[in-house]
Image (cartoon, rainbow, N blue to C red):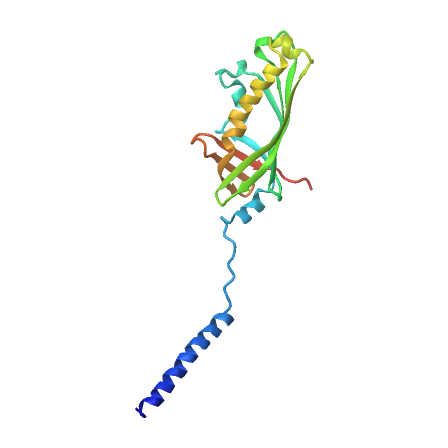
Amino acid sequence: MKKLKPNLILLFCLFVFTIFGCGEDEDTTEKPIVEPSVTDPAVNKEKLIGTWNIITINDKPPLYFIEEDEPDEEDRVKIKVETLSYSFTEDDTWTMNIEAEMHDFPEVQDIEGSITIAGMLTGTYTLTATQLTLKTENTDIDISAMPVDFIESALEGDKESVFQELLMEFNANIFTPFKKSNYTIKENSMELNSTYTSLPVMKLKKAVDPQ
């Protein structure tokens, strides 16, 4: 039995060294610095913040839906887009600004006039590595005409019904399909692919801040 004691003492020392020694190494070892991934939502959020002009939807002008039933261009209402854009802020809010004028109505060539739709939608957004989701909190869009009775006299309808029809088409073609989208951002270009259907694709270009 006496011959076993040195071995037991040695084993005990090794056991103590293993426990305390390994623990000390774990505490003092420096952890490598992990650089953020290009797919990190925080990185993409930095790219997203700013104003983005809507360029096309399915490779066509964004307001093409207003007269898409007319196959010939000369039979379509002329549309001048002043503003049609999204703005994203650092505090997770978004705004869509719209101002567009419709004029030169082929069906009423004997009466000159124009219809303007203008206003904004606002809300909050959430961003993951691949998806952008928009929640609407306020809609403030209105329609006006020049002359003021143009809608009634030329289009044979009342202002409220024309406005509701335009707003319904606007929501169905521009906003609703892209409330939840897969997105890609490359430099100053962004593409939104609707998750509601496989068809709508919106292409946007980032506005350059004036120097």
